[in-house]
Length: 508
Image 1 (tube, rainbow, N blue to C red):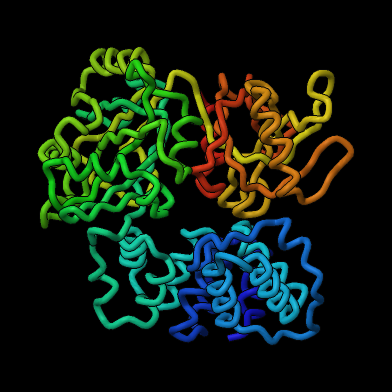
Image 2 (cartoon, helix red, strand yellow):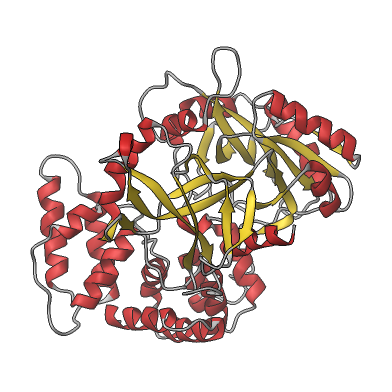
């Protein structure tokens, strides 16, 4: 199939706010693919090609000099093969080889196709083709049960392979996708609550109240001495965290899938700032700052899948599997006990607590009300849409951030887009000011008189005292006393908080 057919489908999806119309357009495209085109095409649709990051940035793409063809000739497989060559280019001469490969691809693409491919490479294809919409389209195209498609995607962590199985697999193959040690699973996600008492009331029964660390999410798979460590986005970082691998090899359980967090501790055993953990987490350098893992859930233990078991049973298995590496927590339905434990967590230097329904299964890849995070201040993960130049001491530095919340349904704009909800320059250290002054021009889309407007891909954690109604912003809500807690390089823009979650605070 020509790549232009994929571009046409994404344009159709971006042009409508109707979820049904989006599903119809994507299903029509999926039905017309050959079996070997499904995985790369799905990767293009969600701007996550199967090759992963290929080491090509915005500046490299912008500096290309090659022209474009007038009529479509590129196929899906042509682009997939070109990205594969780019992904493996390394060593002496690799820079020139990458540039030559990019210029060759550019010269074979139309203007529209190259714009599309560039955004796929950079991971910022804003069409409204969110994974949930695409999952529905896969089910529609294959005539498959939507719940079976969603579960297969959750358990495999691979949307493209799920689509291939649904469209071209043998009867029953979709339903046969199960947990597999060594294959990462989409993590369960949490909503927010204002207090431990409120969280207990929402859960509606006994709950596990656990420390909420200001660390990095990890998923660890162990099969004997073979240990693999994955991030929340399912990237394999085993080679970066040898201390976590060694710690897991010393645990009692021999074959297991663990869900947890990691952070670094200072000399007194107190948690270091999140930025210290992420600096170590994303580095391949030998550690002067060591990471320690804590585990709060287990999905498989020694031949037994636990995904659908109640949390209470999973915690019993977790105790047997990890011993002292379990996240500190209590099980209670007493709000006073939950609040005391929350105060203990804060006193120990942690963010707050997680409150989880003890009778609930593990909902891979989903955000519901059975897991609730409680922090002493409200924090939201928002996306930087633009940055204003500073004045006075900050003259010459990019300072005031334009903050956007995710609008997945297009209630206040384009589906899958972002809605501006406020600005802030508070909480920015000199180090962060220097960093963002260097960073944001690299992802610049255009400039106005006062601001640099950027691609919506940088996630920043913002603390607020609440929200207020606003006629200035299209979402009808503005942040109150917003301040920067830190950037979140471990999160994608698609994981940012939604405008709906901010608007819910208005009712409070």
